[in-house]
Length: 169
Image 1 (cartoon, rainbow, N blue to C red):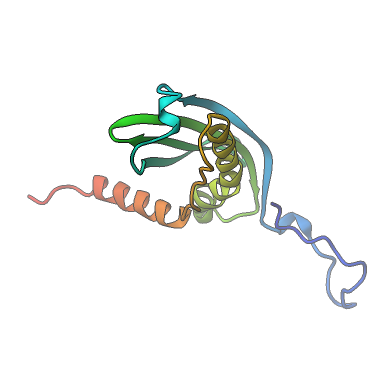
Image 2: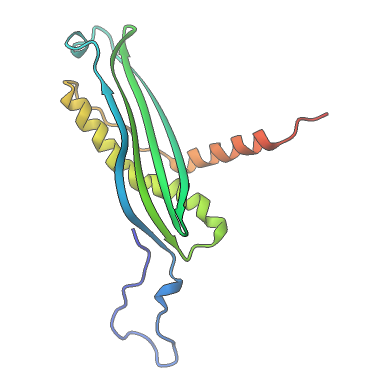
């Protein structure tokens, strides 16, 4: 995704300076990749026909680190397991990452951009990887519901603030 002006070939007024593309906020995906992945189907073929409605447990984490000036690696970690009657049907652990370049964004907006928009761009690809592997493991379609990365970010900020607040004397 790039938030830049493509120009429209001469719609400027005579007194208006040419558009300066260097000041436009930009978020560019430089790369995306599987960093780590595992899928386990330890009880097949018994697990392929569960006796009860399965329960699904899913955990989502987002991490980021600077790689170069204006470049960040963002990791979206999805861990899940499905059980039926206390028997593990399948489990997965995926770390899907991307390298992002961010230009012309105010410093106070960098962290929310990295922790909300970057994982939002990675999520559909991570979701498809998991869905494909679960299907290849012999199970019915498994689609992870869309994730509200704004709420995840707010929860994380609240947790950080709470951990930094000194206890009352």
